[in-house]
Amino acid sequence: MSRIGILGGTFNPIHNGHIQMAEYSHKGAELDKVILMPTFVPPHKESTNLVSCEHRLNMCRLACLNLPYAEVSDFEIKLEGKSYTYRTLELLKSQNKNDEFFFIVGADMFLSMQNWKNPEIIFELATVIAIPRDKDSVSQLSNHYENVLKKMGAKAIVLKDSVLTVSSTYIRDNIDNQSALQSLIDSRVYNYIKENNLYRV
Image (cartoon, rainbow, N blue to C red; front, side, top):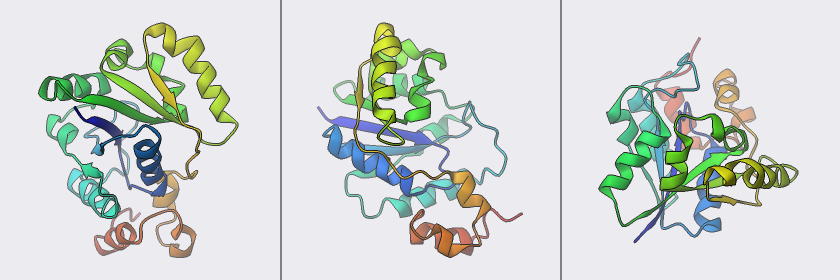
């Protein structure tokens, strides 16, 4: 039986905050593998400035080159349509009955999971790994788990290490300012964006 982490997202583009989420989850939850899974169409976001699935997959693969435990999957992209977590987990579990799944989310996502589509199915099929945005949010996440999600049947691990505060929107808006992005995005991903002329107005 393997312990498999699922890190979903638009990854438009993938940045170092995403990579830290994979790293911290791998270490903190003792995962055997972390799968980065770009969405086809995220149910909670508009698709403005969303580059092709192929570009997003390629950028994820470049960003994960130094992570031997990570792999990039086109599982949700092949499903097409809106990418609902409960459905993805149902399909993954049906194909990997002996594996244990962990669903990795940031603070904002964790605090709204009770409002997701069929959250009880998510909680039945996976342990949620919550990653704080800063030290102060650790207690907020823990309280939300105890007072809300646990009562809905959730199992959760709240990590103590916070990740880099950066958004893909900021990356897109500053794509011509390489010095501003140097610590925020993998150089291979940045070069790929420039070579393919992505996120140009």
